[in-house]
Length: 98
Image (cartoon, rainbow, N blue to C red):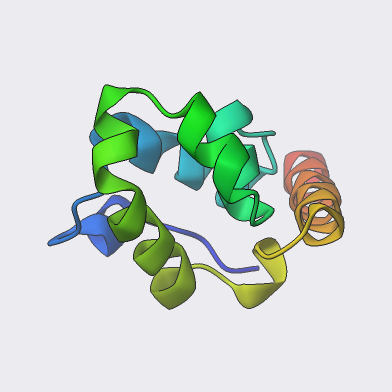
């Protein structure tokens, strides 16, 4: 399964705390907070109203990063997000068993 790495964010305007949340979501299937859930599921009003002072200023950069660097299957709808979380958590559980 695809993994995000810190170097994937080099040159991006994605805030550092948001980078960590995106890596935890993609790599481990950890549910993101309200802002990133809204961004991931294409809820623009929810994203803008839940954004902190850094994320609201860099929302276009966050969206472009997601489009260019994250798997398409991990974004776009609530169904995609829920499915990605399930897959990532199953993979993590299998890795722990090995």
